[in-house]
Length: 461
Image (tube, rainbow, N blue to C red; front, top):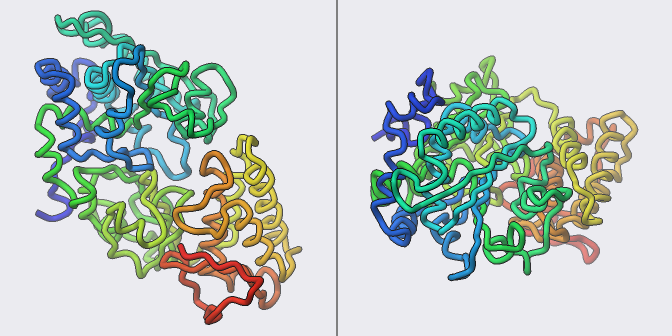
């Protein structure tokens, strides 16, 4: 079986004109998963999901079935919160799931609630996604009217209410505790963990499971076809299929559902049925493998499989499933500034290293791009990064409550370590750096010193 032959699981209705309607969903096999789930005990549904080895699709990649088991036994009420605040730059897979197949998401919510023992779910959708909000609102109304949501679903004693909540457009509420704060009517700012692990103290300080849209969309198929069938797809540590959003300088930008852990970056970016290669016949310069937070990869990494563990060992991540491609003509200094500016503007301001550090990174990069940079600015950039994320390791060492601050350091480190000559062109000559970053994802075109001097900071990615 080739990479393009694997069966699609959650995008099968994308080309069905009325796939977003209740009629279209039922005609194509919808709501059979919840019927199969209701015929089982909740614990059996949990075990089915565990056997599928379904990893969370929101970025962290934590096993969904294991996460469900973290709720303290016998403590009620408990809540399910759907994280539909897809805000990582370059990521738009969940938006398409909500727009084109909202009933599949609703059915996934029902299955998760039944398995975990929730009678109340909250579907939090990013504020800018008006079309997705409208589609979900209509789907919920239709599902309530048809008896798929509400009291005594499908004649059982299982009841669930689902509330659609529109966000206000903040990157930080993609973090689960900040999302919970927003749901409670507060400013979206992350909570300390511990003690506020959502499964123990989440929404209204009750046990709460927070799952990503794509994660839940897989549940109807898993329950109907079995966890073993799902686990038969993909690689050993990355089971099933996964959606990736490919954007940037490719011929066919879009969202593709591919076999997880088996498909390579080269397949996804160059296969005619996927990215189709670099537009204009140009060469690949670099690509971001997992959203703007991820350290960059380069042409020599194209044959790496889309497998979380393998990519993690290279000093980066698959993250939110957003792959952004840069061609040979890209100004990497300006690309770095664009990414850093986003994180600086989206910082909630709760933690000083992030609030101050991201703004300083933006200011320094703007100075360089405007032609007023100094040779010592490269060292200053890396020094600020080191204060936000000590050592600039991967996974990052946090000085903040959530990873936003560390996310702003990755484009800086990636760009300087690989494209130092482009910074020097802006600075008008060579620039020395004493703060070093080493690792597979940060392989520079210049020779690093054999051993750092006492005042140098060395980090192994």
